[in-house]
Length: 119
Image 1 (spheres, rainbow, N blue to C red):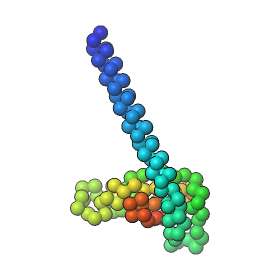
Image 2: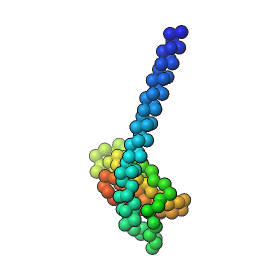
Image 3: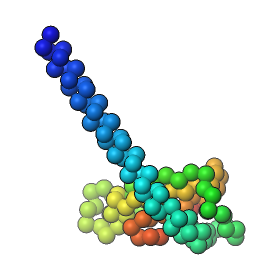
Image 4: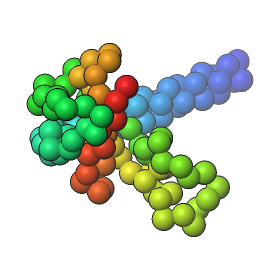
């Protein structure tokens, strides 16, 4: 009987910690997106795409997500002395997408710079 009570309390404590963590992360993501949304759209609009002659309209993205790190930077996780390591694994980026075959814009919040790439 006591064992079941302890297990129940442990499960409830685990669920409480998970819920608090999820609420914190969702709130922080929403706050960062709201804080940097306008800057990201302006930076993406001013960044040019080398392969295309047309400039997409970044003021109405279909989705805007927050990701940590830029996956196209060539740095290994064990290469801690590289000056590009924080860009790859620590910097928050807002990712703006316009559609399935449209270009993707990644706005680096720390560097305040947009990177546009073709899909």
